[in-house]
Amino acid sequence: MTSVRNRLPPLSGNKRLIFLGIALLAAACSPKLRPVVVTPKTQTEPVAKPEPPKPKPVVARQNSIALLLPFGLDHLNPGATYTDVSFKQATIALDFYQGFKLALDSLTSLGYNYKLRVFDTQGLNSQSRALAFNPNIWGSDLIVGPIFPDDMKAFGQALTGPRKPIVSPLAPAAPSAIGNQNLVTVAPPLSEHAATAARYIQNRLNPAKVFVLRSGYSEENDYIVPFKSTLDSISKGRTKLIQTTVIRGRLDLIIPQLSATTPNVIVIPSTNQAFITVTMHSLDSLARHYPIVLFGHPSWEKFAFLHSDILQRLRTHITSAEQVDYKAPATIAFMMQYRKTFHADASEYAIKGFDEGLYFGKLLGANNGDVKNMTKEDFTGMHNQFHFVKKPGVGYVNTHVNVMDYRYYELRKVE
Image 1 (cartoon, one colour):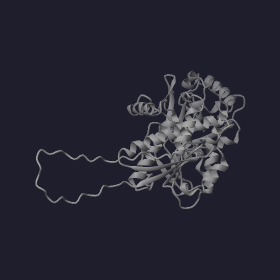
Image 2 (tube, rainbow, N blue to C red; image 1 turned 120 degrees about the horizontal axis):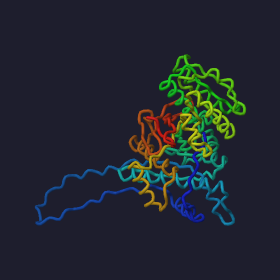
Image 3 (cartoon, helix red, strand yellow; image 1 turned 60 degrees about the horizontal axis):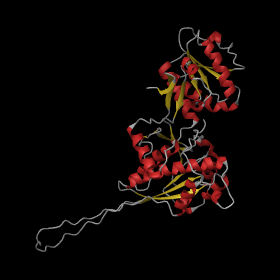
Image 4 (cartoon, rainbow, N blue to C red; image 1 turned 30 degrees about the vertical axis):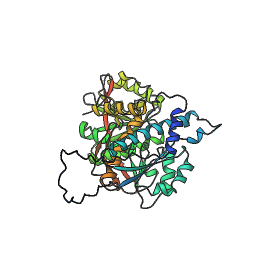
């Protein structure tokens, strides 16, 4: 599963990042609101009476959050410069930070209290590992980041033991590769996409057999293994899984097994452009004689080379964990507030930052600095829903994935 392609907001050189560097050095803490006491004026001087003792104001517990993002502020030093890669990483970091900070500010206005510390991972594994030994980080109530799989792996493997939750905010990497029991994986990993597709196929379509068309690359097993495991479990072995390696789009081996009257469910777990293009053209020819329902890899959502007319004729389905309804009132309100605050349009990374800041910030505030009850506290955000399941050895994993299909030449959520 690939990361979402970033839509860069309009920038003027490195001005936003220079401003960010100054802001971070000044300490990034959410503002705390203080109640203003107004004494009403009276018409006449009342007789002095003993005043009852005034209740002490309730001060919300200050919850500490460490945010680890690849700003690469060292590139702002004299003589240094951003590369295309480091600049894109810094832009993602800035957008996510601003969305996350805006969520904490919203919660602060409701009486919550936060101390947000921001750390620069520089997009380096070595720096991420070194930050794991910083007491200001491992002593925080909540740690968010790093955002890239390799950086999170370096950080998570160095920071072990019974510590606070470590949120992986963007990377859909398999949590088993990180191996930290305190990990919270927000982006559903590929195994959850495969399991969701298998459940949908069995419960909605209930086919006698499912065809898996392979390209021959071993990484496809990351999808096929959890798909087969889930399908076997739900169908109790009644649904037969037929795997075949397709070469140059030749489908001769499966044609004799296809049904001319009932839908033939076909799964393609590949992300290889050449293989997908040739195989789908062959399937499109078969669809004239055999009804086909196709299920693709979740990365297909971002592939521009796929033709919508072929996708629709093949009744193509994919799973997705990143669907923003820009017409929803909550999204419109957020976009307006974000532009008013930061004078830029909110990217999908800013939206994810806001959703996660709102969810985890509220959990912290409601539980006196303890992130708990994640398995009982579901959340519907602008980009996805959170439904966390605790899994032995790998922490909490968000398992909510949508099933989408191509209708009216666009991708729509299946109800």
